[in-house]
Length: 345
Image (cartoon, rainbow, N blue to C red; front, side, top):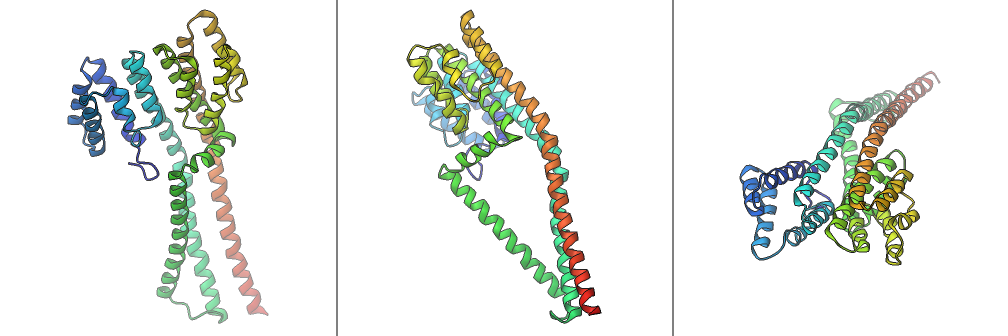
């Protein structure tokens, strides 16, 4: 489980969704499919989750009800997608879509981690080696100038250890505050503002959120629910409070009898191409198929945004590393020449 939330991690969701898709497409009933996955899985948390879902289904719950009871452990997107797939009789498509979605997310995460691994490692090494060298020079110069006790490696290492311990404590406190804010529901608004409005994260966040929204909306409309309810449920899977609020603006307009094209014209986040596709879907009478295409369009746009953002993030980290190294070198020579000046004076 995660530190901030007890949800299954992305690394665990990828094989789970793919196994669900495979067993269901193979024709196994749900309970038998869950049992087969439990036998293959070595993860205790996944097995316990599937056992709880099985028990709920045996007690008479639908799959959607059983999954919703595990909302602490499953992402909202999974819960709403399963509910939409079951209501529309398209669990096969839903399981396959979930598997593809989480595999795409894992692929994108790996590309970002791979691109940023070297500069982040360089920053960490620069911090430890740079502060080590800087403090050693200051200690040695202070010993020579008589402003500090006689230099000894043992005393220096103890002092340096306390220095790093203090900074690690600061980082731990910051992490603890973030966990607390997350559990209180505040962090999602803070991080949502950063990821939704600040480049280069904004294009990625918006497109992924809208891809989830329109895919869920297509499944729910296909299931026969009233459109305003479809929008309300789909907004909850965006996992972004600002984009969810923006999508919910369409609800009163739909209730007043407006088309989806007109209702979504009040959104600040929809791209013009998406609006045109929705218009074509309504005119052709195949809105559910069109919404799936809109979702795929946003997913492809998100992948392109990631490809553009990764080099930018790479250079941002490099600039941060260069700034840290430059500061350390500057402080080093300031201490060195300051000591020389005092000796000469």
